[in-house]
Image (cartoon, rainbow, N blue to C red; front, side):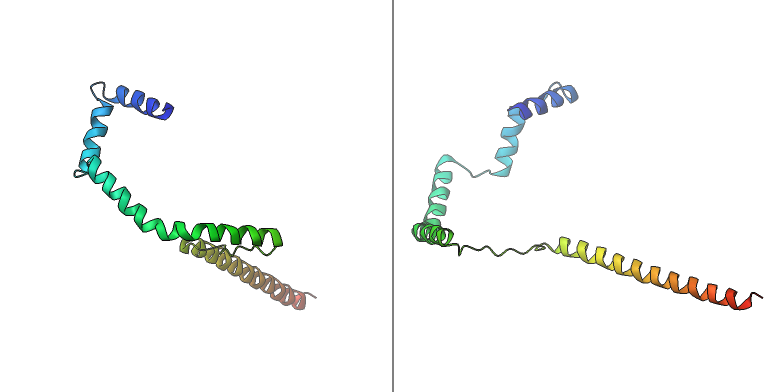
Length: 123
């Protein structure tokens, strides 16, 4: 509620004639024009029926999870970098690191070669 109050205060500074409630109602009607209380009830019932098989297996799964926890067999498999953007970022960092190491090694070799040339040319 505090954030809505802050938003309303900011909007009142920008446009004193703005009615936030009326604007929200208008946006809501535009987003879901056919949504009525009967339609909402029907949609909720349809979704609840779809979740019934999951709810039927839930007690068994909870018992299995608690038994695994009790016996110390409970494990969770997670993938550290499941997002493609994360993999791209890590790949880029590794490529930069490898490129930097190769560049540094080439620089050291070039310095050694220059030192070798000048050492041979000195009297």
